[in-house]
Amino acid sequence: MDDLAKMAPLISGYLQGRLWAFAITEIIPSEACNFIIFRADDVLADKSITYRSVRKMRPLSPYKLAVQYGTDIDLTTSGSMLIVGKTRGGKTTGVIALLLQVLLQGPDEFGSEVMVVDPKQAELSRFPRTRTLDEDGEARAILDGMKRFTASIKERQKVLNDLSEKTGDAVHWWDAGMHPSILFIDEYVGLRSVLPAKAAKGDDYCLETFDRLVKVIVTTGASAGCYMIISIAQASAGEGGLPTMIKSAMTTRVLFKPTLNEGSFIWDRTSLEAISRFPAGKQGDAWFSSTDGEHETVSRVHFPRMKFLVYRELGRLLKEYYGD
Image 1: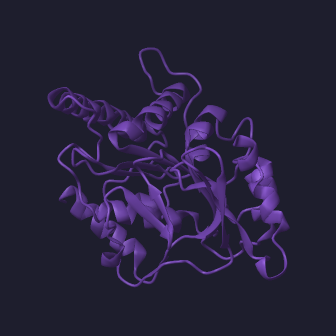
Image 2: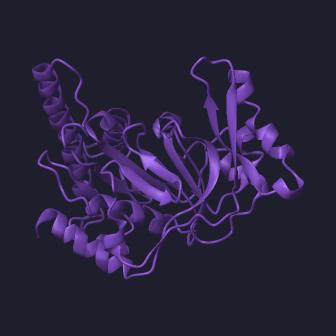
């Protein structure tokens, strides 16, 4: 079965003629494990969603975030998200489209948060309840926010554990009425460069603390409905890139303005051979995969188009979310 599943890129490559724009987008094994269904879609068809009012973005389900028609991020089966893309590729707008959907659900009674971290001190840093560098250029407020977010994971998990003991069966965060809790770090690599390699005596303000918090959130947060969105400008290996362990733990991956070389740092190169035939040059175009059971094959998507004052609505919803 595994060998058959690996044939998806090969099949996509052989779709020619009137099926040139088609590629395998889903692999469905039979319950008896004796055959596989390969689903092929026209990857150049415009399936994008256009929202002319932020109210229309309220998700029907509190744990499904819309990307385009037929493509959602199912938070019950996926984890934290890695967003990669160069400037003006639609990366930040794509993330905001996801954040707006979470904000529109409102907070839950279990300490949910939508925390935005902007170390660049750019437009995102001007919004209420967002965190940026301190006046002295240090990132202590950011680190404190991450510590609080990490602590909330333990608190929410304790609630779920107590409910499980009471009911005698496992209680998931969505069954308990929890809403998603999101920590979005814009320009992850830039933030790491601000932190000192070693902490002063009696202090934990350093890169090691930051990396530890990221690891805890990415690897343990999903079970309590807590997710991290990491944004980086360029996928790369080694120093200045994303640690392999963290990258592997990010189960939803998006690459804006994609190229085959850069995509190879995020996915297995063989899985990109078919999708790389199709250019993705428009702002908002991206390659996408998620380990939610439906979108594990890398596919071409277009994040929502928002025909309203996006930043104004983001600020307003952040105020409403926290009751400011």
